[in-house]
Image (tube, rainbow, N blue to C red; front, top):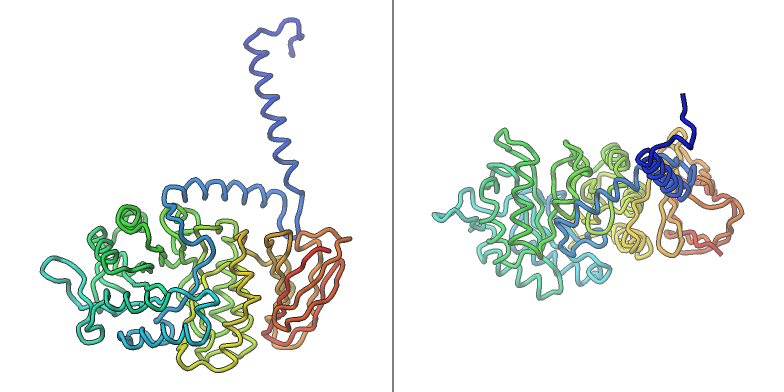
Amino acid sequence: MARAPSSWTPSLAMVLLVVAAAAVVASSEAARVPAAVGNWTGEELRGAAARRGGRRSRRRAFENGLGRTPQMGWNSWNHFGCGINENLIKQTADALVNTGLAKLGYEYVNIDDCWAESDRDYQGSFVANRQTFPSGIKALADYVHAKGLKLGIYSDAGTRTCSQKMPGSLDHEEQDVKTFSSWGIDYLKYDNCNDAGRSVMERYTKMSNAMKTYGKGIFFSLCEWGRQNPATWAGGMGNSWRTTDDIADNWGSMTSRADQNDRWASYAGPGGWNDPDMLEVGNGGMSEAEYRSHFSIWALAKAPLLIGCDVRAMSQQTMGILSNSEVIAVNQDSQGAQGKKVQSSNGLEVWAGPLSNNRKAVVLWNRQGYQATITAQWSSIGLASSTAVTARDLWAHSSFSAQGQLSASVPPHDCKMYVLTPN
């Protein structure tokens, strides 16, 4: 039976006052989150906010001032595999500058696997492959830096790298980071092969700690392949984390990586990014329309824009996609909010996300094999139905007015991409 107010004890009254105050605060916090914004329910938004808060607290332990926007550059693996040498890296740096890609933000020139000798030296240190990198990595870094670019390198959280051609960094973490720093390395991609049966957390924590101490100026990219849901824990360890297995140069692989990465959208933000793997644009396995979709979705999803083709011999189509400054601007937007899939019906999709200055980025993506009309509803992308916008078509480079919804006829496997600015 409830007791009358006159019979409450002071201690009970104090408890009830605290509970009531907490309820008011919780109600106030909940009121700030709309019941639904597009396909984001209020519950999802509250969960995302909680995860973002957790991510921020984890990331503070690693914060190195890098990766305020997703990293941009080039990586050797997708096109060249182990067929790399110092002249190729120099020529790539030259090409990034000469094509104007460097000025658009493509700053990292990243050497992937197979750059080192099979064994360490007598002091236990990495040695650059004497046949393919005879001048050494320090000299190569100096060359790249003189071009106004940055040099990246590769290692592995295991006993050997994935190629088996060179040592990994397991149990050599501090020594290797000191070596990379002495060479002037700016970026480390850290793979996940040959783990010696040891846990992901142990192996990546060791390297992260070494980076915090000896590699503070090095962008740290964890390549754990998404096996242990790194979006939930890697924010305290590095600047980006792979959410997927390796991408391949085909439509099925690219679309599946986009979907796998999408579920982790709320964990990305300035300083730490979800990584669905590098770009295949220009490698020849997809059509121009498919590569345009690839680039658009990666840009919207705030994925790293790491070119994976031979930039020394690009077609005009490839250059046209990779150099679209308006699409790049969506990827590099200062708000750093990863866009996501907000509508999907039988392969006809709308992906969208917020940008700075109350703008929205929208991609109408046709994953079917036939031409189709796709309509983005304002309610799906977080706009009031009465909002009038100026819609900027980022591939046609033209603008028009819209209100309530946005429709376009989209060719098969192609997309339309827009930035919506409320009037």
